[in-house]
Length: 593
Image (cartoon, rainbow, N blue to C red):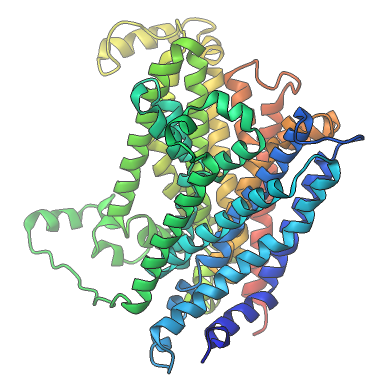
């Protein structure tokens, strides 16, 4: 058997090339890329890379290209091995005449070849930029190599995650998190730590070069990059482009080693054991009603109440409290990260940029946490039932599609709310930084005297109006945060209802979330190309823009009342996703198999 005649490679590649998912994502990617180029196309004349307008066009277009590739890569690679595990066919591969190397080679080539084709199909659109003039062949090759290397290296990371994880949803989340770290988080040390550790500026700048966006920035704006960065003076002939290539090669090599090891030495499945409790303390806990009936394994087997939503209780028992260690560790990580980022920003920029800078960072961080967690929580609500074979038994119960949707959505909202609450002290910091005269300045909130003083002031006329005027921005910001959470959760539910596997649903949910939070900022850079009404309608979808306008009145002054339209838009999107999900589940419940 030759390497190009591998049966796994043929099956994976042909099935992926013929699948509706691949064709939909490929054509969607090409259409979005073409639309971006059409919107950025200059109205007349020649715009070379030497001109500021030409540089902006190329920067926006190729940034959009890399962003779309990053969003699509996990959908093609992160489910390669977990799909076999979920369908119980992974062990069967090793009973065939194929060697572990042939299995590994087939999975590797099939996944990487799809990603390479994705980049190759975009080359004609990227080459159209040469018609604007001033683009050399070397420039196009370097930019295209950045996109190709990013796609392949992050694809190999997805294969490594898929070989380690047991579920597609876990593999996808891990792949997206790793990509986010190397593309966006790698910029944070050079922004937040450079003033605290000035001697490490060069090291921070090298870490920043791990991002493909930094390499792209260097290729398009070389003079600006040299004036603002000292890295190249220290690293010699190594520029950000070369650093990114070297790092991507090392990342690909490590990912390939992990993937190869997991294929050659697959993890054995351990037998599940149940812990026996004989202590008096545990026996007392079992007699209590809340919350030990959710935490204690024996109480999780108790019959569901007559008037309770069985789907909600089952989801709470199986997801929210089935893995308390994961919940506790995630909450701790979010708490530490939010505290660290808030302290770094407050100590370095608050004096220079006022407290509004701290509020801006708090807004972006909070909505970023929700955008990263909410789609992954809800994207498997329906597809998990389909793949596990429990949807058919559920159809035989008296549970209606509406009860199923609200039960699952309510449970996932409580699940996401835990992570939101873990960073709620950021809201308290914003309230503390707000100048106010409605609450007593002296005393502690834990003392009765403080509350008696609050009750006394509350009886004064106009006190509640004064509270609203003082904390109006924070209250509206919390409303936008909660609405964003519900919108992202219903987007995941919508994706799960209309997908066949959890992997497709997760990729679709993150794409919708990325469009809502990132793509809708397009009117900022396309103001000259879009009418004011269209720009307003697009920005009204973005919760970050609305929260920024509430926090700082100077933001988006050309779009008055943006936050009000954003609240209405989020409510509309939530209702659309909810109704579409109910309709789809009703169809699944009533279709004739």
